[in-house]
Image 1 (tube, protein in one colour):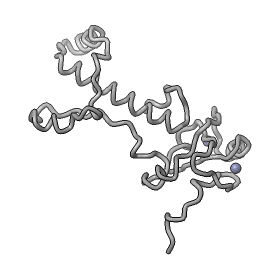
Image 2 (cartoon, rainbow, N blue to C red):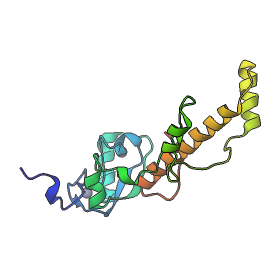
Image 3 (cartoon, rainbow, N blue to C red):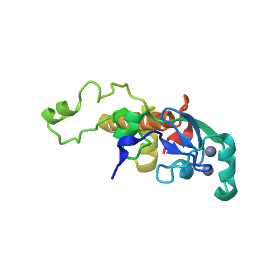
Image 4 (cartoon, rainbow, N blue to C red):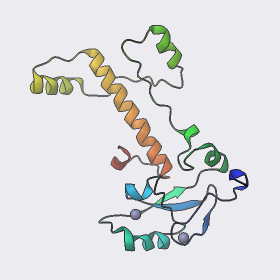
Length: 173
Ligand SMILES: [Zn+2]
Ligand SMILES: [Zn+2]
């Protein structure tokens, strides 16, 4: 049984089955269900992308430039699409109960992103006060900031995998 060893191309075009090589530019559909790794539609040309519209029945869609991963990335990644090794490091939010020792173990320089408060504190406090009458602690603000950072990093990942240089609203899942 020869398996992944002799991989000479990345994937085949979903329409014409032409081989899409490693690092080859190609196109993906803007619709998230089409680009989801499980469905994994990718197209060698805009014409091939056009062809899938016949059965996909999209209301609004466009073809997006994408670039295939390198062979190394492909073989390393389980899905063959999102190179796990290159994924941005998640911001690790240690539970409040974690000991200082545990926190240090996680917070290597590359894993932690040092950020100032990224949210509008007064507005968050006003929202919470208005909805509940409760006050808001600083650790809540910090936790929200970490969440924002984490979502940004994930969005960067999606945009990168789509071959874009702009992070769009649809990258925020
Ligand atoms: Zn094709
Ligand atoms: Zn589509």
